[in-house]
Image 1 (spheres, rainbow, N blue to C red):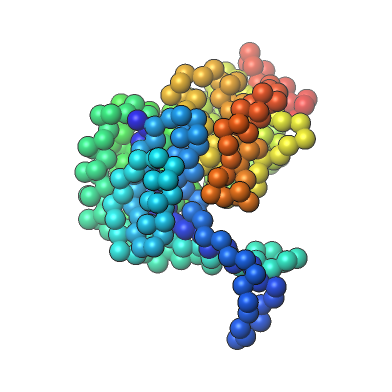
Image 2: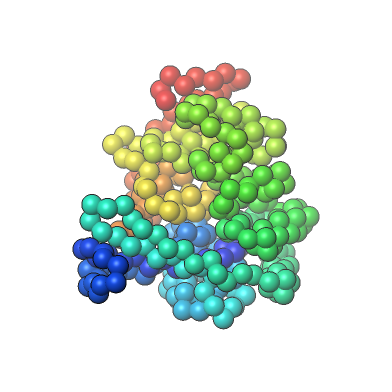
Length: 317
């Protein structure tokens, strides 16, 4: 069993209209309800790869029931602390030729009692796993506190943590030395890492060594960069690009967890992460990708080495 913590998953409502005039009535051309950015997608990928994810977190309202139904349909076990209201709602308004307009509702806050209930549920499951994926938005003080307390508890029990949190306040988490970390540009900037891709990768490598983190995985447009103490490489698929979705990180994290669980070699983990990143597609939701697509991408993926034997070489970047 792989405990997959989706602290505060929400739903996303995508609405397409031909125009928008404030104060007037408009017909909706297309409407789609889907799960928002969360490790629910990590669990989906783990299940595709024949893993055994067990999703824990908070859920409530219509969105909570929708998420539970999605997990049940995909034969993914879950155990949520149930709430009366939605955890998060995102309304995405789309018009052809215009950038998307996003409305985000974070009005429902977690409480100290929620934290206590979640901790009791988690303690009851820790004995059955050796690796935990930790994911969630750190948008308020209580969510941050629950995440940090959860990571402390997991580390105290000697379990390995794969970190894929959202938000800019990541320093508190990486300082606790997760086993692996799936990171994006926004989080690197929050840590003071800027510049072109080469500079970011070098700085991430140094940060990894300083914090004693085993692996980091960084999605780019051309594939996923894997960083370890002794090696850096990118998995690249010629003619294909990493999909531009809000939850590519979470999908990659599911593959990273499976790679660690199965003791894959580092290069194979990078190929798996890149294969997933290029396979997922929100246009085919709820079936965001297939195992066949991931396997085909892995077979086509070539490894470009950026660091080995103590030397950087970015000629192919």
